[in-house]
Image (cartoon, rainbow, N blue to C red; front, side, top):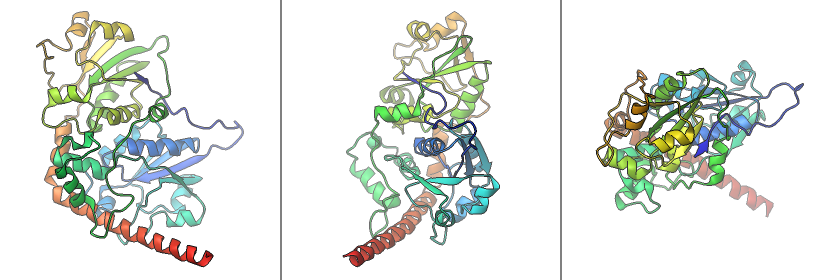
Length: 382
């Protein structure tokens, strides 16, 4: 059970001091907990976080086709609880003019590198001006990796020891013949209690709150989930939304194939980052039991319009909340499913493979140039 809320890591400031405004920008395609962690760190560096999101046209020009449309990406970034404001259609290259236009003191980016179509650092101007800050990249997740999991639909991503097929895929999907870029690639995500605590702030229900319970896989946490949770959140004037996440084995039992694509630890962080969720139950039971309802003092239990499969004993998993008259079906108006996202990827497989190979080739060239420069400097010092 993990309680959620707004970032508790913002530094205390003198009320008389001008608020520090921070700028972040990016594609935010297939928004995952790595993006959320970057924005969490950026928000902790100041008082107000503005996030610029690039258009489909800009991303296609510099990187290749995005998985999600710009409207979907705008909405996904807005739903991250550390974001105060978004700027749609932000320029791909971050300039001092952009920072000044939005009254931002500096911009923040991860400790990887972002390059234009000509191979130039998109943050070169703000770095030279001293208005650039760096945060730590989240190990174990990248859009490259998630796309790869969907293309293979293999369970290898749930194990440190990947299968030969997955290893070959990793080599084909994003590996330049000269070697491996330190910024593009696949590594195993290792959950820690500290990471969970960073994402959750421990907000308890307050008197007058309406406690709403939802449950599911929340795999590849996407715009369909966000639209559903936003609708659930709007059911009460003081909502306290608890999301129950099913264990991987449970998800595989009812979704079949090789779902879930993201393991329980990854799904936990993804849901914790959402501003519409107050608390997460890790490994919630498939059936919403009387014990669960009573323990959390649940007022409303919600489910979307998707099909509800019976529990292993053939019973209705929502039988108890229905008997109590607290069950509601919520129509989010969005029919997007994890299956639909996988189909988008499969349809454009060759384009995505080419995109990532090109991206890594550019990164590797920059990395090698940096290494050469470091060797030259070391030689001069000696």
